[in-house]
Image (cartoon, rainbow, N blue to C red):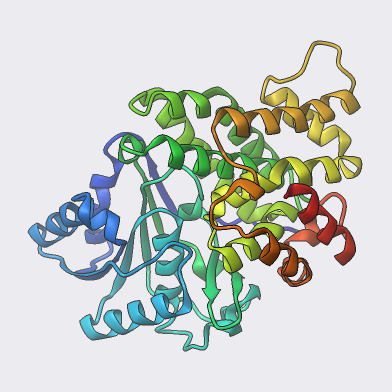
Length: 386
């Protein structure tokens, strides 16, 4: 059976690559753009700098900075209204996964009218939208190279996962220098998110010979650089390594799929507004322990790639070592357990178990897990992770 492999047509990496935005727009003859970003990117001065560079080059730019964490359908529709008003020919995304995901869906709407719910699932976007140029500022989601967007339907408390080739950026400008100012807590959250992408892409039932090397490279780079980037925010080699890991992980999971961790993580974010990277990190050890039986050799390879195993250790022992290592990594990075997260009320969490488990399984990702859980098993996994 044939499998598809989709990545942006142009990916520029390395220090200063974000400065290539104007040349990339010019070579395509684009003169009016919508810049999708968030309030922090504006207050930090980065969004105004990008807008000024565009204006100085004669490119008309409208800034839409009303994207919130875990972007909602209302964010997308407000951005689309701004896009129509300024008659933009292209969309530029600047920021972390939230502005990028929001920009992806804004860009397809001129050719694919709302409601957004009709794009939920796999391959549900009929037509290509406007070209999208992406500048990531966090080394985490990998959204700059994926055909995936996640938008929250606040009316149903559901995170809508959309996967379609038409969501893929045309150009990704991956500049690790933009991550040098990330604080340790954000570095930890997006770093373990990146590691989760690599692991799930590698153990996914849809993994391929094209995605495996990318997933393993992502995992290796996380093992080498994540904790250094967390301890020493200005460490350029560590920041470059994690930025590359995020991009490689994105390329891997977008073409092999994430699995149960992401499926269970989305309802936690939708109901309790826990940032995506943190909820992934909280769930990763528990889900890994449950999933080992379906892919012992692959989980053992993950542990060895991270450098966490002893010489001569059996595959079963290496896989168990991986679970302990993931728990210890969360502790070292000061990532809290679910029960210790301030926004999570225990009674409400327990009352939401059935809904979260049902929404997780309905998302489609758990079906690609090495062991596919039942509804009852998913409820129990939430209890164990708590």
